[in-house]
Amino acid sequence: MTYPMEKLREEKVFKDPVHRYVHVRDRVIWDLIGTKEFQRLRRIKQLGTTYLTFHGAEHSRFNHSLGVYEIVRRIADDVFKGSPEWNEEDRLLSLCAALLHDLGHGPFSHSFEKVFDLDHEYFTRAIILGETEVNKVLSKVSKDFPKKVAEVIAKTSKNKLVVSLISSQIDADRMDYLQRDAYFTGVSYGHFDMERILRVMQPTEDQVVFKQSGMHAVEDYIMSRYQMYWQVYFHPVTRSAEVILTKILHRAKQLHETSYSFKSQPVHFYSMFNGEMKLQDYIKLDEAVILYYFQMWQEEEDSILRDLCCRFMNRNLYKYSEFDPAKEYKKLAELSILFERAGIDPDYYLVVDSSSDLPYDFYRPGEEEERLPIQLLMKKGDIRELSRESEIVDAISGKRRTDHKLYYPADFLYDDSSEPAIKKEIRRLLDLE
Image (cartoon, rainbow, N blue to C red; front, side, top):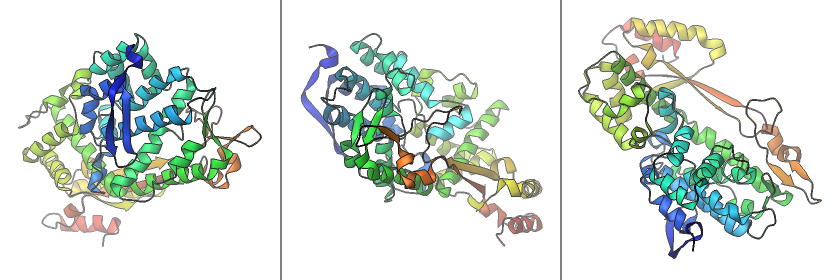
């Protein structure tokens, strides 16, 4: 039997709180799970700093990646099997792309990327195509198989149906993380009837469509996603932790550039600080490494780095106020001046943070980002875009919601041992008096 078709002598099963079981029969999938690059995902939290808000949110990218794989496996082996529009030769490609789609995520993912101008999608491709254990496994399938998998994840593959399974407005990635994140945070918002959605899925040449009879299950999924973003993913306390995390990384980078002598030298950061992040250096980074430095930097001479690390490690987070940038930019400028006069660096201790989400949209010609719409298969066989049939979805379609918060260390502002008059004026402007 050739390697792509090889099955394990005995099925491997992962017990999973969301899908009950994750089933592995393919030798290729089992070998990919065993690579060091995939095992690294155990040390990357799925929700970054959210564990400081919802204490149960300690689950990893490893958990999630297995979940996405399991959903795609069920679709390929149960839902699509035997359909004339489904090519069985795409099965292994779909499973590998599902399993590896998050392979390039770094520690604390998006906060980390912003500071060092990194792109996890670039590193996902680099791991799949580079000199890695993952590449060796994929290359045993065929010489061009790593490239095919990378193209599906990058959404550049000509196989649009397989791409839509992994990346669309209703895909295996979203279906897993909504349910998984809801489970581990303990909220009820992210639950929807995935079983019903799977039953009404049908493959077409270019994408997955959904039978009209399942429209209400799809509506429920979209509303679940909407609620999860605003109640969990954009929670202001989580964002406060992200602000502090980002400022720690900025401060460490600035100190390095000014030849500051660290007590604990950030050797794992050097390639990032110098803008020369090598793949092997990136693979060595995980959240245990980052937290080690934060722990050690609580003893640094630099007062800002020391304070920020103490705040993050001990959850002494910034407080926040609602902020309207269109109306309150003058107040922000005034606060910045007062912070400086009070001896509080506004670059690190007065931060505006914005969150924005577009819960659902259809493709609008000429827009920069093409959004593949959710299509319904009507009873007469014609295809209709979801918002044309659903009043609920139509009400939120194309409507971007944005939220702004102003973050600051309230404990500094109530410490009147220095500059009490200035701090009182700051408190007045922030409506803390």
